Image (tube, rainbow, N blue to C red; front, side):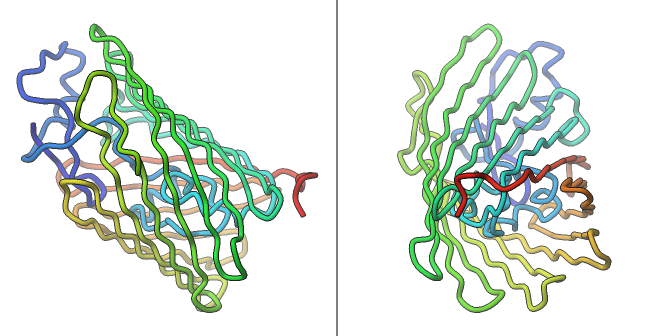
Length: 296
């Protein structure tokens, strides 16, 4: 198998010798490069345009519903019911690698609950995942969360398979404006279909420092099985009311983005440029609803 670095991480997909229809060549150019071996399906990529623009450094931001996949403990910071949609027209400009995400979260008791649905690929190769999570404030400065993901993989001519992955995360407020969090994904190391190779566990850690409300510095670290550590760092600032600018860098890519808020809506755009493979555009819209009757 061959491997390539995406968003600072190494990943792998299909083995050499796989027969690919002509219309699938674009996919293989991206997913069949490099050296090493690992389970290639369902690599975690940043969800939402905000996280993409920050090169996956967005892992502990309270209430960020798109960060559910990285660390479910962020759900404890949800202040009001929110729904969102994120769209990637084509990874690295390839229409065959489209991605659509639908997310929702709401406060619930002492914490919050949320879900994220993702569809990636095309009619030849399709990954669909559904993640549900819940987080609660375990102590004055501590939050903890649990998540579960149903993975479904369909390959034309080969059938489909599904499995379940379990995740856990925690977040700690070290001081005013300084947050630290860590999580483990796929801790049960699930396998797909007849494959004996599991979807590898992933360890993540993140830090966010906000010396003032209009400026945030974020650092992310991830470590997948049989892969090197990936580090990313980003900044987010608000030069004007309801306007946010973002910039970040990782080992093999860098990101830029912006967001605007108005009337309960948040529109985000992220541009991620891979040093070898080119650019990817990310678009997100999030809407905050009136307060939930279940919130405290």
